[in-house]
Image (tube, rainbow, N blue to C red):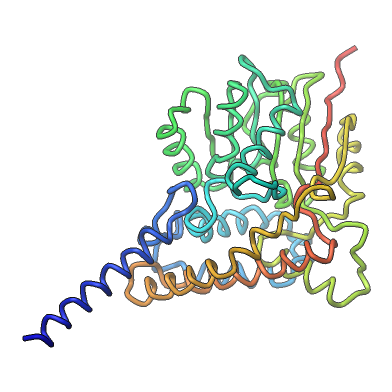
Length: 359
């Protein structure tokens, strides 16, 4: 009888531990997604492994994808179907980095980094602003709440549109936030229809930066401002250093990038489409705290989450292939950390541009 009671107690404790591990410890910072609800976006469960294999084959040699630039948007869409739930579960609703701030949580540092973009473009009530590559809308909601401007987000991924709209409604911001599905290389907006624009670590997915910058230039009103936080290789990157190349290619493969731009390419692309450059600087440079510290401190959480994903996939809760996707993201986090520590990569090179006023 005593052994039966011990067995029952042990089973109850194990069940409670599993519930805590998966459903309590696992959710994203903003409680947007539970581990038990992981999916692959719009990809049916039985096709996740095949889609992952196709994605990996396409981005295995990132520089070669530029030669088939017309295929990049489809594979970026596939990437976000594969990773959106994992990102939201393990990271939060804002799919980007921010400088670490002494005395501030990651969530608060992220919010301040986002609202800084709104202040740079002078967003205010009555303005119509476009979020180019909005993801599930974390930055959009922070910027709308801060500025009270009307924000229109565009993302290529239909699943992210649904997630963003749901979050907007729950946050009580759906009157200020609108989300549309579309390719930011061909935005479905009229010429001169926005008072401002921003992109936060999103245009790195464009095969040619001039294409997306040209579209943003087109939809802005004359005199309007655009700010972007860009992923770049810094001046410390050495193309003849094998370790540097491995790190950068690892970042490109694991984040659906058709080749990172150098820090000097950003301003050149903006000028090429007609923008005036108001300001340009690396927000990751000192005295900013290291943006990659969040990855280092979260290493235990990454592997804890990987165990959760493996268990969920093994019992059929998570789609087959989810383990491979999560393992790819864990490896990419290591490359991102190395890129930050060596100073050869920055995810937040800020460029502030103005569309010239009409004469």
